Image (tube, rainbow, N blue to C red; front, side, top):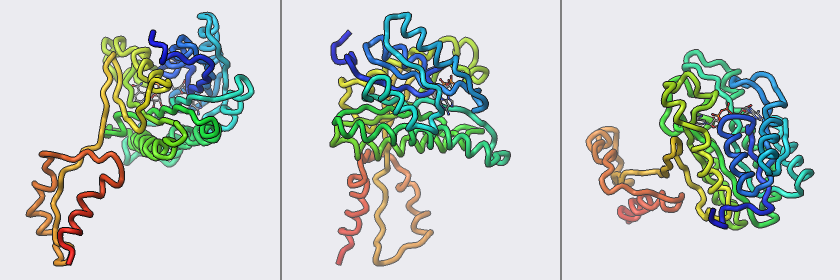
Length: 303
Ligand SMILES: NC(=O)c1ccc[n+]([C@@H]2O[C@H](COP(=O)([O-])OP(=O)(O)OC[C@H]3O[C@@H](n4cnc5c(N)ncnc54)[C@H](O)[C@@H]3O)[C@@H](O)[C@H]2O)c1
């Protein structure tokens, strides 16, 4: 085991760690020497109810294996309580894995405000609340690692998951800006889009594939991203079944029209193919790079 992927006295919060992917992350962090706050509200996949036993069981597993962990049963929407629990138990917080999640799938024409709001509340507001409460501590100590859990349903869309897709890609938007704001304090922020056989995906993935998509196969990436060994920030990684890949934005080189001369929808139509042609495409890493072509077009036609 490389020394760098050990956690010595580091403290990790994993939200929604009472089962599925979060449980696997918590176990692996503990195995690598981290002190872990196992958070889980213990409700249903639909976000109903609460049950302390989910987090408690994982803490027992960690302790039985010789690791250090405490259970926390708060909702991520009470993020400050979870962070306070970490401080009370261990005196610090170094790593935060925002993993808690629910599903309220419905095609958009059947979507009700309650389904939209609850998915937003748990995934976006929940991740915001825990991260916002942890942030000052990470800044103050000049060290932190934050992992957000996005989804391919956000990146690519998925029938019946408009609420979930909105929330999940929203978390990647949050990742990008926190990566920029956190960099000078050595707070690195990345996102994963995992696939794993959990209660959330049971019945959605064919049984023989489900069996192979073990949640534990996602955790090595998460533990790496949560470690001092990781120096990458702002990344988005698809992961599952023992495979890991990185996702990035790609933009065509585009077409520059004369901004002074005026151009209309017919010009757009005439150049549509070129606008959508990804030959030699750009991969802007930030806003400045993204605006380069636009600025070059202004210059090209400047008086
Ligand atoms: N399994 C997949 O293939 C897959 C794919 C893409 C994204 N994800 C995401 O990965 C994360 C983990 O999902 P999973 O598949 O392990 O499902 P899961 O249902 O097994 O785990 C989610 C956990 O979050 C907990 N939780 C829900 N609401 C909470 C709240 N308000 N506060 C605290 N805990 C809460 C649940 O009790 C549960 O234990 C989720 O964010 C999910 O959206 C999973």
